[in-house]
Amino acid sequence: MTTSSTCTICKQKPTVYKRQYSGERLCSKCFCLSIENKVRTTIAKHEMLRFDEKIAIGVSGGKDSMTLLHILNKLEKPFPKAKLVAITIDEGIEGYRNEAVRIAEKGCSKIEVAHVVVSFKESFGHSMDEVVQNLKAKDMDDKGLTPCAYCGVLRRRTLNSAARHVKATRLAVAHNLDDEIQTFLLNIFHGDLLRLARIEPASSSPLSSFVPRIKPLCSVLEREITLYAFLKKIDFQTTPCPYSHRALRNDIRAMLNRMEEKHPGLKYTTYRSGEKVRASVRDTMKTSEMRNCSICGEPSAADLCQTCKILRIFDSEKHSTQQA
Ligand SMILES: [Zn+2]
Ligand SMILES: [Zn+2]
Image 1 (tube, helix red, strand yellow):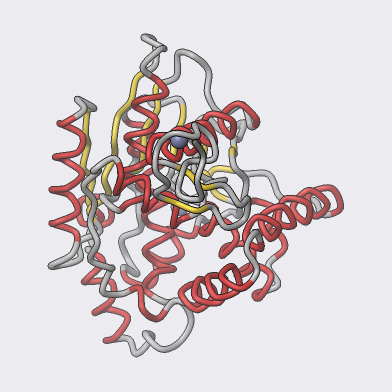
Image 2 (cartoon, helix red, strand yellow):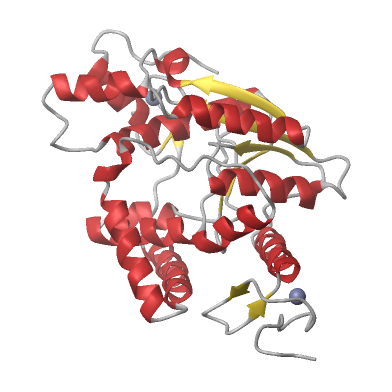
């Protein structure tokens, strides 16, 4: 018998989640399957993976990356030639990152996935704490970029070189649908159409230094990832980064959450709108080809990569010459 508290899919088990934008009521099992199917469909739609891929996964220890690790491990099980390796970046944020590294380590050993930790300090000579102190000392902390912007550039770089180092053929990152539409709106607010054209579910480059990057969670809502992690008893870090509070992204997240509450489905229409805008921007603007940075040789959109530009600020004599 179906009642208002019974799952709309299996018509048997009790509902644990009402999906506002579709009207579905889902039991725990049907909900988790729907998320895994969504990820499987996204991977197929954007041709993210072949059967024999070596997939590096950026695992920060947060809910998104721990869930991505769990789901990819499950989806790749039928493909014995596929391999997973988790990469955790230790940015060097006292009292925050140590806990995350431990959680990532534990999560990986539980499902027997190889785990690599790479720190900013060993890669660039500066921890994120030192970068922030340096910005304060130079009186730059209120102007220009926030700590998150610096951290994002250095983290992207470190992930790419670490993935290349472990000979990964794909780099999977855990950006969810909320992240993607926040980035879309951020680029709209900043009028940065070139960057907008570059946000893709799967990006590649003819450069061998760039490990093709995929976002298998890009069509899953953040709150549904949290629920999935909770229902699957996946351990993740809940402490927010001490530097994240100033980011404009947080205000956009709050705004979108308020709007979705009032207008269910709005996040999905924003996502699709982002896809359309991206496609037409790509067609009308000549997006610059990636090249190798003239200092460090890493992939870059300009002659000098963002990482080298940042390191110049902190390190006027010694540039990033290390190669992975
Ligand atoms: Zn069900
Ligand atoms: Zn460079």
